[in-house]
Image (cartoon, rainbow, N blue to C red; front, side):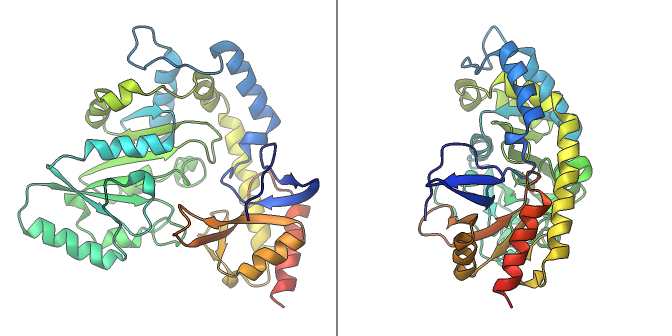
Length: 349
């Protein structure tokens, strides 16, 4: 059931004048409602304005974009970075780079629609993908294989071990990963999976991501080699799209210490939840990641009847499977999690 609200869904939301605890969404670090973060953002809006509608190819350019991109590439460990207005746009732009006959796209299981081109669908299993890749390479076709995946696929099959990739001839393939759910909260210095996937030794590595989840910035990014990102800068796709707001880019840099402190709170909340829950095996989750999936619609109803709302909808369309997830954020406090776990424990008695 869809609920309509009039303010950002933090740890609490109000629906029909009734207050609920909210354990859903993707605001993992709770930046969107953090007062210190908001104050930094407001000061940057005063300096840079609310938005910048000109092309990044304009003859007048704001230096903050280059500063933010240098900051991101240094943090993540890539040679270069390009920012865009959304993560979805970043994914589609990467796909456009590999739409020619010199490339062949291969989608891993559970890959996100932001990476899809035409009617190509993901392989159901990594075994099927492995066979298809090796058949393609053995046929001596000149088209370079491009593997596309989500770093967090919520099954635990990708991050942290990336078991599926270990069976693939990845050294002969370009690897493109959507790290929207990872950047800001997993990997070395919470920088996402770029360095982890680099260790897999792909022929080339590209990361695309939304910065609007853990980092609370309404923008997207592409990270990779300098040569590849020079191609991005030459596209009509890049030149014709408005960039993210410059205030967002400045805030990304200025909020570094807040991100670190909020990640510590999130880690504590995840640990507290697992310590309080009687049977964690009722949920599917990735170690250290604040999302706990389940498949029992009765649990959703029970929590809702007790003033708790979780993520529960068909994603990405009505034809796809129901996504039922409990999402912990850095906004939650102990009493929120204690109420949640007490209810879950009583439901599974």
